[in-house]
Image 1 (tube, rainbow, N blue to C red):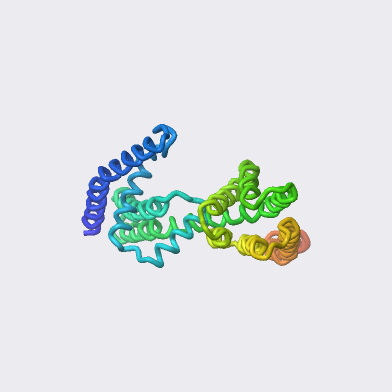
Image 2: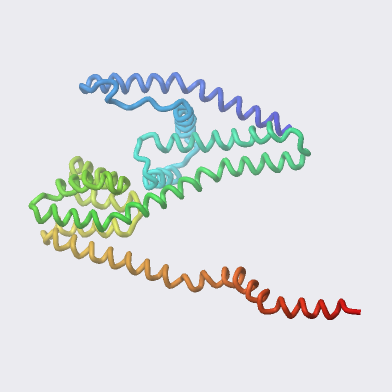
Length: 302
C-alpha cells in the first residue's frame, strides 16, 4: 500500500513537471527576445540553467501558482532566501521545488533500496526519509543564511573604512557605496553583493532612506540596520558622513573584540568536561593502578 502511494505521488509530480516544462521553455525564449530587443547578445543574457534546477523551478512555480503557500509564509521564505545570498527572482521557486522533489524522491529511493527488510522497519525508514526531505532543505538554507550573515558582518568594518576614504575624497554616497562594492568583490563577495544591491536601489528608488533601510531588512543584521540609520541621518540632517562612518566603524570593531573576549572567557567552562572525561581517568589509572595490581597480587597468593 505504501509503495503504491509513493509511486502515485511520483507519477503526479512527474506529470506536473512535464506539463510545465514547455511553458518554462516559452518563458525562456521570451526572455531571449527581450534581451535581443534591448541590444544584448543571447550569450550575454541569462545562462541556461541545468536540467535539475529547471525541473525544481517548474515544480516550485506550479506550487506557488496554486496558492498553497500563503502570503506571510512566502514573504518569510523570500527574506530567508535573500538573506542566504540568493538574489535571483526564481530562487524561491527553485527552493520550494527542490524541497518537494526531495520529500518525494528520498522516500521512494529508500523504499526501493530497503526491499529486503521487514515491513515495519521499511515503513519507519520511508517515514524518516520523508521527514528528512521536508526538514533538510530548511536546515541547509538556515545554515547558509547564518554563514552569509557572518561573512557580511566580518567585513563590514573594513567596508566602512573604505567608505570613510571615499567620503573624505569627495565622493557622494552613491558613488562611495558603488566603489566599496567593487573593491570588496574579491575579499568579501557577500558584502560586495549587498553593497551592490544598495547602490542599485539608491539609483532607482525615489527615497534614498528606503534603500538604506532595506539594507538591514534583507540580512536581518543589527549592524547593517545601524549603518542604514546612520547614513539616513546624514542625508536628513546634513551631518558629516566621514565622521559618522568612522565612529560606527570604531563601535563595530569594539563589539567584535568584545565578542572574541566573551568566547575566550567561555573556554574554561567548555574545557571542564573534556578534562573530566579524558585526563582524570588517566590520572586515576597512573595513581591507583600500582596499588590495584598489588592488591590483586596479594589476593592471588595461596
